[in-house]
Image (tube, rainbow, N blue to C red):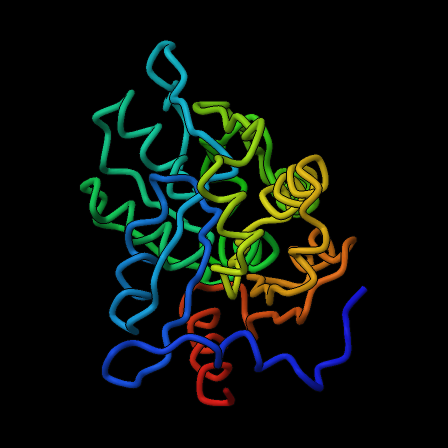
Length: 262
């Protein structure tokens, strides 16, 4: 449910800094562990940032993952990389990452043989199927308690065995802080960035519970994918934008395009 775009630029044009440049204020809803690179990119663009994580990440406390017979590791999030690295010192297995940010996290943790699918779970499954054979052994997928897509199903159809092991949990936020509620009510936020269907759905739920739907009608949202936009677009927004590809680079490109249009 989106509104007509005839006057969508008004909110972005209303506040200026002392040197005449427009101040745009963005709300990040990603988990705190994942937000630092995005905050840096936005601040480099002179964007004022609010942070309201919709998920809190906690690593599991358990035995070291069983790597016997495994030919590769599959990571669908940077948090999966961090959780695995927290429990296990093995860095020699090949790594297949869902996207560039997850691949970067793997390299930062000491993995050297890292390939990025540069997209979503479907592109990851295709990359693995091209690069590995079922006879090479099972694939370990260190994951969270909730995952998007059916990686095991996709690879299972190609004859692979995928061992999914829960190494972290993502606890949903139970409310918006007073600071964020006031910022929304006072129209101090111009755009909200959503990276996953789950975080978008949590934000919508909390906004409704706080009576903030009228405030949301003044906001633009920028979503990593159509699936994310679908989860968010159950209430009225000023404008809904979607990245051309499910990558942070594409999302920032869409952000820059929007800025140039204002």
